[in-house]
Length: 242
Image (tube, rainbow, N blue to C red; front, side, top):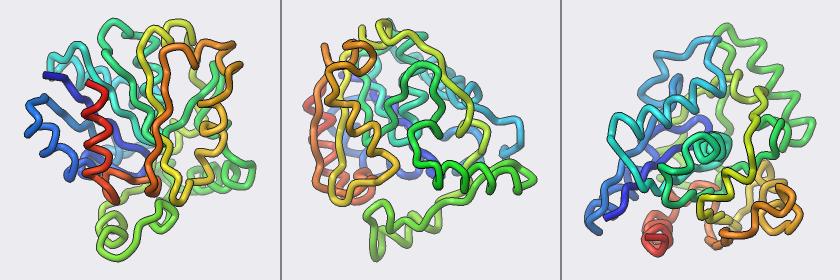
């Protein structure tokens, strides 16, 4: 039995894992999906003071509350920042770290550091103009979703807190590299804001060479939200990691 902890990306919530969780349970594993402060069913907690540390604490608090060790931590998109932080601070609690089409930061970078200047400036401006310091969700078509999947995600998305977007993350790559790591690359269509991370995952010099040992890259021919568009395909990949 493995302990899966699933962490969604920006604008989403634990709801996005609804099509994956039953398969993990049926395979005999424990699984818990986190909702970060200020989004999803916790959108009523949105306030200007939410930052990266708030969300890192959300993930670590879920591990503690669920009494999870030997955790397979699956982090989607923006949550790559959070997974990296948890692996740096609690590597002994993790069995595997799965970057699901997720951000791969360098020490001292923010989530926004990996984005083109036009995207970065637009999101910062939107969050500064909002009383709660949040920026709106994009149309789900950018995640490769259409029809009923598009409508479902569009209904459920919520604005994302702006604080975590620009706050830098300091960590020790060598500590993170103690944890076996998998990057799942979603290619059809690829999301442009993951391009930098997509290049880093195969760069032998990334993290001064600390990334590649103990890591692997898997590929899914689906869009950025495979837990929605191809939950069975994602489930199959996750089960190969335990």
